[in-house]
Image (tube, rainbow over all chains, first blue to last red; front, side):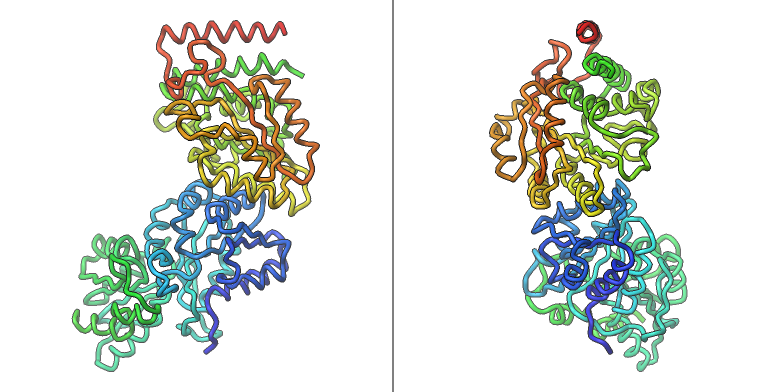
Amino acid sequence: MAKIANKQVICDVLIEAGKKDKDVVALCSDSRGSASFTPFANELPEQFVETGIAEQNLVSISAGLAKCGKKPYAASPACFLSTRSYEQCKVDVAYSNTNVKLIGISGGVSYGALGMSHHSAQDIAAMCAVPNMRVYLPSDRLQTELLTKELLKDEKPAYIRVGRNAVDDVYEEGNVPFEMDKATVVTEGCDIAIIACGEMVKPSVDAAAILKEKGISATVVDMYCVKPLDTEAIVKAATNAKAVITVEEHAPFGGLGSMVSQVVGSECPKKVVNIALPDAPVITGTSKEVFEHYGMTAEGIAKKALELV
Amino acid sequence: MENLKALAYELRENVIDMIVEGKAGHIGGDMSVMEILTEVYFDQMNISPENMDDPDRDKFIMSKGHSVEAYYAVLAAKGFFDIKEVIATFSKFGSQFIGHPNNKLPGIEMNSGSLGHGLPVSVGMALAGKMDKKDYRVYTVMGDGEVAEGSVWEGAMAASHYKLDNLCAVVDRNRLQISGNTEDVMAHDDLHERWSSFGWNVIDVADGNDIDQLKAAFDAAKEVKGKPTMLIANTVKGKGSSIMENKANWHHKVPNAEELEQIRKDLAERKEAARRG
């Protein structure tokens, strides 16, 4: 298994695209290092824009560039990008319909012990509430690569959240099922449906393996496309299961759990349990320690599933 | 060249019609910004309904989006849409002519209304021009109350950092905002020094409602290399009728019948005086 962070994959794809198309540009707010975008800045300096520590400016400048034919990718810590520059994302990107791709790096609790100022546990809720904003949380490096390549083909706004650290692969190299804006069903079962996004997909898949040993079969849905939400996949997974679990690295309100509950509640009523971060500043620790503390692990998800079936 | 001084008064009459018909609008700022927009659209910029798809044409962002009525009047006069339709539907249910600029309309680049966005967006547009070695220029107009927004200064920093001499911004310095005098609300009478200290070429336009003075300033800005230019256009809020001029309560007032009669009379007189020269 290759250990490479999803953000680095985005940079690699953009460098290749940028070499062929001078309109592909990357912007950072003194965040090129943390975004793993230094190679882009070094290889394509004419296509790289530094805005300094000014996230509002980062997003508005991106919108202006897009309006003049550029294809900007603005990379900044998800916590600042999604809330510090929320209004610019809403007005200059989504409302004005500019071709800006917002890359929220080190999302969720990636920054661990740095505390709540550096955690983005509200970004899914915030971004999904904006009309014309798409929201993606890819699960591993392989899916991130395919998603980034797809996004290069369109001219619409999008917010992509990735974590800080390399994560274990969910998929196999050379065999990654991927269809744009369609959730990926990783495993299929009939007892429980686990719907997860971003870095919570891998522990969900591992939870399914634990459950299998106990004779319980689980469907695991990788809902990397949180908006537009693949409602068909939700209904199908929920209909075939006794209960639904959602797992997300996000606050308990307004995220994947809320959205899945809306769909299940209206289309195929069934119990939905949301595994998420608490409605409070999280306990101090690395992201791994935080996940363990709140049961956002394979074991924690499996335990919750056993309670439900 | 047509008489832009008279045109600015004629466009003010369109604005009054819009506001009276729509029972809404930011009348005071519309009146103060009118000569700035007229000079930019009818003299400075290479822009028309026919060349909107030309990547080399000039660009404009209406950062003080609440003065949209003045913007609509100018765009209609440039042929982007029919002024009669604007007046008949402005602010009404289902209208495409809403109370702030919307880029679903021809001629409008970006949706604005939330203040402090126009300058940073213009920086991006000017930067794209530099990247592609194009000759187009980018213009934006802000309100003076608007410069209290922090994002304005983020944009100001970036514009001078990237030496955007293809960018010309204007502050419509009418000295009044919704709560009163700008110096009482959040003082910034040293605007010239502030922009200058951010690395901008700053030009004070003593009378920002004078087309000739504006023309001279915009023309001078084109000659400056290596720096963006800021025009501080000293204007009169409510310009055009003595009952509105320099009165903060006309920020977004809709005139009553008596006031309307006086405003129309004053505007007609000033338009005629401008025609005579």
